[in-house]
Structure formats: structure tokens, C-alpha cells
Length: 490
Image (cartoon, rainbow, N blue to C red):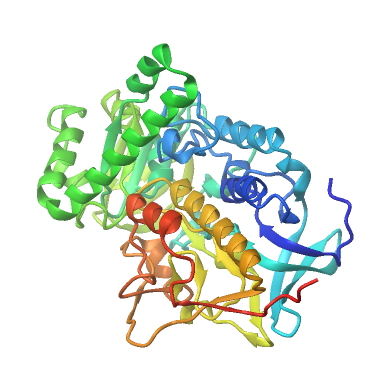
């Protein structure tokens, strides 16, 4: 464990030791080996999402050949993997590269204040029941985008009368026995679609209660290309080939979805119908009111969700909830879903900066007034980067590019002798929503989300190839980044 004093001035402080933080630390020590850095983790374990969620069936909703790190091949031929395996992958990555020794657990960041006079950040940290300041030249936020302490948890009329157990997936109670029980899962997103088939293996029956349908696609959970190429090529090359194949397929699918939404919609719905029992009301339960990729698509490995429905172990009810009753849920149609356990898979609560406050020279920053530069730095905020992944592809693809770009930036500043870098918003750049998604959790966070701009480099393109070319080969000094604070020559 790092034993340097709290008041030491680090080159970089990384907030968060999850998927983004560990990947960022790897690139930082590889490409900026002289930089002194530390990772601050509020919890007592690394892994972020994968160390927090414990609900049945927890798994990735992106394929692991792109969700995994570019530098650390994923060796399991199953692209959709369980949370336990992903956590083990992260722990192994941290240990192999000595990153685990850079993590300070139980360090909750309360706020960060930039001093222009000292050209550094003072990071207020709560640890061991005390509050202390740590200092750094560059602040890197890898704390994700949702609250670990609070989920989106709407209140339903009549909840108090329900005689069974109500559970929120984010805070799954250890030892909950649902064997032989009737379960109602409220929600239609990735969590609900994961929970339903997983719980159906032991429950008497699982009913997914949704207000409106979601696009659900089947994905065979075994990568033939990886298995084939591994026979003839080193595992690293097999991984790279599979990774690039998946990246390109995802880009093509997304492009086709935006250009030909009705045709792709029809293909997805027909794909679901082929796996469901004859006569199933596909149009009612699997025909969303929006176009593909207006919200994230849900992936089911080997059609497990459809198989549970076909076997009679699971069902879907599409209607609004009127109220909870003693025995379960009454829908507005009058139908009652009887349940012993109700799982509220009603979504995440967006929280930026891990809940910390930001100040620049004594002024508190309103995140909704910021504009994202290349989707990673914020207008008017000195020496700070944010890891925010893709919404239409694997999260890690973008955070990997961000980390490599920041390393380029730091090395450039060292060569030129600069201490401070600030993205300055230009005249004529119109503000637009940061994420073009209609998902409820995004819409609920409209008052705190930063903006993107109407043109580059303020536009968030959600395109890996475009971002890769820009971050790897684009000029650092582009007329938008403002550099200052020449270091004194020794």
C-alpha cells in the first residue's frame, strides 16, 4: 500500500477503482511512467459495478471482447459473462500490473477545489472517520455515472399493504430464498431481462411487469471466431481479431438502425417471435414505441429470457401499475399479478462526480452549465478529465481512448513546460443534450448533465473509429485547449 503522506502533491489522482479507474491506471503508468498517482475508492473493494451488484444472473450487457481491456485479453469464449467472472478479471488485471498497491480503499471524495494560484486541486477526502485534503496537479474522475447509495425507486400506491417482500436489485439482500416463490419483476431494462430467466430457474414463476416494451436481441453466447483463430494464432491475436470483428459489427448495426429504423425494428421483433411460443402476443410485449437505439438495446445470451417464457417459467405483462395489493400488483386493466416477492428493477439514479462538489477558484461549479470537450474534459475546468463510456457500444472502448488521450496530453504539457490546460468554449457552438437517448434515467438527470456542442471538438459522436482517429492522431494544440503556467526551468 502507498505510504506517502496525505498532503503530498500527486501528479494525478484517479477517483474510482472500477473498470474505468483500473484501465486508466494501467495506461498512466505505461505511458507516463514518471507520474505519481493514486486511486481513491470509497468502498472497501475494487470493481465498481461488479463489486457492488449481487442480484441473480448479474452479467455484462456488452460482449466481453470489447468490454474487456485492449491490453488484457478476455480468454473465455462466452462474450456475455457473469459478474463474478468480470470481477475476477478486474482483480487479476490490478494485481498483475501492481495497480492494487496504488488503491486507497475507504476513501470517499467529498469535493475538489482548484486553486489557480497554486495550479493544483485540493481533494477533500473522508477516510477512517476523518476528513483530510489530498493534492494533485491533474484530477481524473472514474467514478461512473450513477449513485451507489441510492437507486431510482418510485413509490407505488398501496405498497404498505403488500404482504410479501419488496427488493431493489442494487441492494440485493444476501440469503434471499425465492425457491418455489412467485416473483414479479417491475421493469423492462437490462436488469429486469437478466433477473427474469435467472430467478425462473428456482422460482415457481416470474412475471416481468413492464409499462412499455424494450428491444431484445438474442446473442449466441459462444464466439466461434475466437475458438477457431485460437487454434492457429496466439491467444492475443485471436482476441484482437474477435474484438475488431465485434467493434465493426456493432458500428454497422448502429448505423443501419439509424438509417433504416423500421427495417431493423422489424428484424428484431421477428427474431423475438421465432423464439416464443406460437400465438404469443409479440406485438404487444416486444414492440417498443421508439426506434432502435433511441434507448439501449438489451441482449439475451442464447435467448435465455425467451426460453424461460417458452418453458412456462416466465411471462410478461405490459400495462401500467394501478397499485400494490396484499397479494401482489394490480394493473390498470384490472388484472392482478400475484407475487410473494416483488423486485423493483426501476432503474439507476444518475450521479455525477461520485456525488462530490467541484470548485474553481472559490466558485462552485454547476455541472449542467458545462460543455464536454471530446466527451472527456469540461469547459472552463482546468486539469480535469472524466471517464464516460459509450451508450451504443461497450463502455470501455471510450474510456480506453480517453485514458490514452490524457496520457498524450500530459506528456505534451511536460514537453512544452505547461502546468495548466483548460478547454475554452467557443462562440457560436450551440449546446445540445450530452446523450441522445430517450431512456428514463437519462431524462430524469437533465438538470445535472453537462452538454455537448453542435460541432467538434464539443460533439459527442458515439463512434469508436472516429474517436480513435481523433484522440490518437489529432493535434493536442487545436486552438480550443488553452495552456498556461510555464514551469520554471531548473
